[in-house]
Amino acid sequence: MTGHDSSYPQERTLSVLLVDDEKGYLEILQKRLKRRGILITGAPSGRDALQTLREQEFDLAVVDLKMQDMDGIELLKIFRRMVPDMPVLMLTGHGSQEAAQEGLRAGAFDYLTKPCELETLMKKMRAAARLKRAQS
Image 1: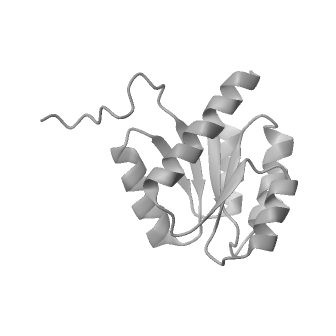
Image 2 (image 1 turned 120 degrees about the horizontal axis):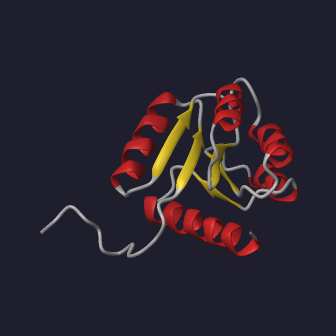
């Protein structure tokens, strides 16, 4: 058996910006997504994410809702101005449906409560990338 996962045939590799200030969670999720062929760039803060987005293009971003330096909704709104067609998935570990709904109103593609199943995250990321390609 090879290391290739045939459940993702002929898909273009996704380039994803992952923003989360929980260092351990960020590192683990980066490793797990890399193993599934995702080009993942991690940012441990909103400020780092903005700098990274200025230097690089991404198919989509996955952003934690609650961060120390910058609220995920605030970051989402800045992303919308910088790259209007980049889908953003929100992650919330705080179970705040109200905040997640606010994210959707602010232009998020969707949201997930963390910890989320990796396959669920992968499906949402692929759906967001398909939508972006369809709108291009």
